[in-house]
Every structure is written in structure tokens, then in C-alpha cells.
Length: 484
View 1 (spheres, rainbow, N blue to C red):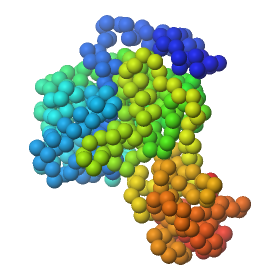
View 2 (cartoon, rainbow, N blue to C red):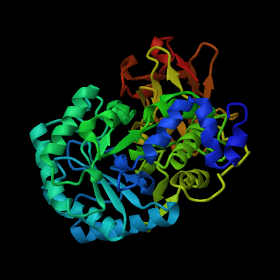
View 3 (cartoon, rainbow, N blue to C red):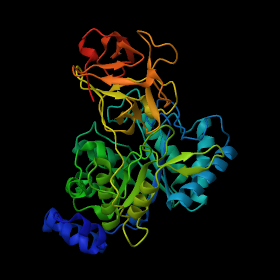
View 4 (cartoon, rainbow, N blue to C red):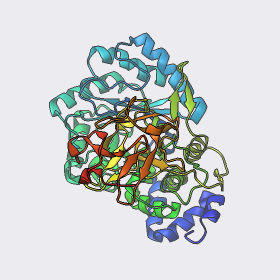
């Protein structure tokens, strides 16, 4: 396989399994086959039956208040949420072939006025035949990888499981990305959760992998968690590989011998920046997405894409039209996702090269990236600095006409009117005006064509996450140094 990935792409996955064994180890792949075939360890709900998407809050699901998936409003009543969800489920099913929704819950959303309405999303999806995975996200004020308030968390889950333990289409994920716990601590947290909710069938409990849900081997090996499903997260910004073979080599050890129990319930890639996902190799994200979808399909694992819909997120594979219905953001991305779900008999292959993926623009003083906050696509959004993560909101193309573009259709612009020192640097629809043109100089500064004495900078020469980006009189300060 390592010598001819094209042969791997065109072969059946049965043949590819043998090649994968060579790429890793024969014994590792044998572990997959043995565990999958062991009837004593078989899980009644096969992971491969989960073809899903995450329906996420536009702010991300880390919220101190109620989580409200994109397209819903906290003021919506039950009937309105039900009707909107029916359209969402129909759109995900028609466009992608999805049969699963992963939805966030937190204490601020459960047992509240919003909970009375939010339940309609669960009810409408399951009434349509979808599975629903309910996962707990900690608040944005904490984000330490631990349960924020154990008493409130337990009360939340008591309410949720009481409402839905009798619905065979609802699954419960005690926590998303428990990176604040050691493996032993996390197993103990889950063991206690299972003991407290012994009336919930174990085969409808989804236990997150350790760390950022990035490895299921520790939870899979724990006898205390036998009978549960497992969840794995895997993202392209975790590495810099540009071949599918390398990504597969990175992914397999995270699964170990537990593919037969595992749902990849977060995996995603930029879908609004023009990448060609049929090209596979030669680009970090196209090779990553080929790898994760091939492994999901070939190993019989579930796959729940992040996100199916999240307004303003460049990874969102769908967007919401003015009529409230969903539309695809990337035809090649959709085709590759469907392959991962197990649809079709021939893998999607397109030998055209990937579209330019864009690169990071980093401030040399901090190493942080020029970032569009919250994946916003709204004109006038001011840029900031943020830790580099490879997201579409940090992927910039420098064109021959001196534009810096993001999302393929937004341009970096100095100010919204007259360009002057201190003006905010924002994203706007590309028009080619002088305020959108930039010169990258030999000394690492980026000057604006409308006024070449103005350099890309940060407020108060900031270098921390969240520092606002402006233009300032060129002074040679460290905060004005950039690498494109």
C-alpha cells in the first residue's frame, strides 16, 4: 500500500485490509478481526449503522447558558422546534444519507423552559427514524476537560435518561472530550455514571475516548465499561501529513482492537474553501478525510461528521438556505463522507489537484495565527490572533493581485471606510479596492496599498489569544512582523 496508494483507492476494502496490516502490523489488524468476530463481545447496535452529523450551536457547544443548535432559537416553542427539526432531518437524510443526529446538552438546557422546546428536536428526529446521541459539553467558562459541577451534571442526566431511556433510538454520551482526567480517573467517572443509571441499557451508552476523545484503547480495555459503545474524535489539524497512508498510520493506534464498538462521532474538514476531496493525496485535509472515511467504512465503524450544520463554521458540510432548508457546501466532501458511511461500491476518485488550501499567516512575535473569530463569515468581522489550528478560518491565500482571501470569497480589508492608523482589519466581500490590497515585504511586514505607511499590527502590540488586528503606523515593532 505504501508504494501505490492509487491501487489502494481502487481495490475493494477487503484487499485494502491486508495492505493496512502491512502498513501497521499484522498482529494489530488481527486484533481487529478477532474482536469483531467474538460474539461474546458483540454490541447489539452495530457502530456501522450510525451515519450521522453533529448539529451544533453557532458559538460551539461549549456554553454557560443553553445550547441552541444552528437554525433554532431559544424563544422557539415545542411545535416550532419540531417543525424545524423535521426539515433538518429531511435535509441531512436527502443530501447526505444521514440517519443519526448528535446533539449537545448541558445543565442550563435541561429541566428548563428551553428543555421543554428542545425535546422536540429529539422527538422529531427519533419519530423520523433517526438515532440521536446526546452528549454533555462543559461550559465555555471552564473548558478544563472535567465535569463543571458534578451535582448539576448528575441531575441533568437523571432528567435526560428518565425522559429517554425508554426510547431505543436515543443514546447517551456522558461527556465530550474529557481531557482533564487521567485514563484511570475517566474510567472511574464513567463507572460511577453507569452505576447511577443502571436502568439505561449499556448498549445505548457511548463512552468517550481519553484526552480529546482521541484514543479509545484505555476505555475499551476496561472491564467496568464492557457492553458500552465508544466514541473517537479525529481531526486533520492534529498533524501535517499529506498522504492517506500516513494518516491511516496515525489513526489505527488510536482505535486499537476496539473498532467493533467505536463510533467516530467527530471528524471533519474545511468544506467552504474549495478543496477537492476526490484528490486525496498532496494536501493535509484531503488526505486526512480520505483516511478517516476509508477506515470508518472498512472497519465497520460509525461516523458522525462535525459539523453537519454550524452557522459560520468553515467545516460545516451543510448550510442553511433562506427557505430553512439545507444545501451542500462541497460536492466532493459530501461524496467522500457518503463513502465513509458505507454507500456506493467504488470509492470517489478525482485526479484533479486540490484547490489551493490556503496557508497560515502567523505573527512572528507570538507564533499565533491571523484568525476569523468564531469562523464568522459576516462582513465587517474584525480579525484577531489565535492559536494556530489549521481551521478554514485561518487558511489564507495571497493572490497575484495582492489580496489576502479566506473562505475563497472574503478579503482582508483595512477599515470599513477611510484607511487610517488604528483602523480595524476586517473581512469583507472581495472587490479589489486598495484597502483590500497588501504588500508582503522582505522584512516581514505587511503594508496596506491604500497607505503604504500603515502596517498590519495588533492593538497595543498584543501577542495574546484574542488580540485585535488593526493597521498602525509602521514602526518596526515586533508585533508588526508576520510570516505568510
